[in-house]
Length: 323
Length: 274
Image (tube, rainbow over all chains, first blue to last red; front, side, top):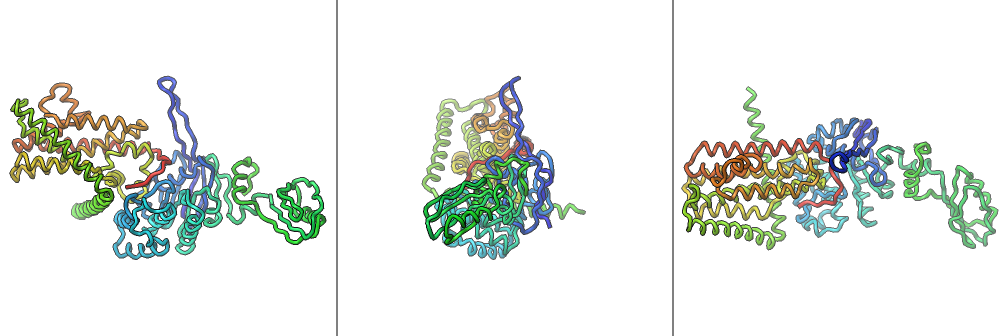
């Protein structure tokens, strides 16, 4: 069953500049006819550069903004029309917007949220216990939010968004500003919740680690349009034709020949690191040349970092994109 | 036939909302008491500020015992009603004073994610500390200076509640200008300030065009004249007009807010609650 469905979703913002007769209206397209289906239980990464339209899309899907044209449904409901009903079934975390009370401990915010969502006191207590345990909230349960680290705050933030057992969770840059360890912890928790509870996750992030660790599918948008929609596992294998070949030799290597589509990233007496564009040069031909260069001790073929893949997608002309 | 279930449903919703409001008031108190020194000093400063104005009027009336038919008791009642109404409004609905900023900075987003009617829920989100000073002053000065009997006190409570609704409506109305003007924080504040200023001078002082202004653009007439007349002679007609005026201002405020909400464009500012 489909959890989130977008059909030609379109949103423009109008800006007025100047005075009197000089006054002009400028229309900026934030989301440009996006169509997308997200099945229930899937974790999708919705990524793109700043100003690509990610947050605007999430705001329309959560009922905050009305689209200029097009339709969208979340769990069968139109978000901007059925906002209040839908909000009982979705959870939202804005990395830059907190729903925790700054001067009060997470405990108080969760109690207030239980009241806002009209949770049955017994159900609330059970759910709270689960969240406190799974998100490790007990260590700072009674500490005012202003005294928490950013990582602790985000854990509490995500836990708060899950209090009313939502079926779909929208996470808008949840790991923004977190250190490596805190990011890893939060990713694991989101992943766990997605796999064990079957919660549909709609994630936006600039962090490729979030995408790799949490999402099963990646949708890249730029200038308000979808430029790529593919499984994460296929993204690096199918999308980018470049490979990194790292070789270690037993003996000093002979000078490596210049080959079309092959760039030497690193070369010492005993090691060689090459970047190969497989569209120009088959990898086996490069390996043949490597074997002739010296006695090979070890060899590894790697994909380039996902960061580089994403950056490449953003800069690539539309006709070259092939999901 | 279906009226009874509808009434029960409405009552249940009202009770639910009152429960939520109580939870917010409790939480807002806790948040303010995290800095109890600052909170108490704000509260006391507001009490003293109001007392200074009352002292000024008392001194004035020792020289001129009657001002256009009003005695010192009427002016103290006016200050008591205006302060208690304003205080009650913003002690509970403190976000009404922040509305222009919340709209301009796109901070309505978080409030729109909850399964609650937006405006009454959003207004509960903040408590204005100095408003508790106003509220305490209003009731304190009325009980301490005017010495009302029980009937007058009950009328005072009722009229104060109506005035509180008027102040909420007026704050919502002025704050909602941000939907139309972009950043209307300064304008909203100045308009509110004009309202407060006119609300603390005897309504009998103004005539003609200004009087018209005081029942339309700056509806201070519903604070500075009608409720005082109602209390002076327990006049139902003045009391009813006070209530009608308050409901009208509240209604206009709510209408302008929801009309403007269609123009809301959110934002990306960093934000924390509390």
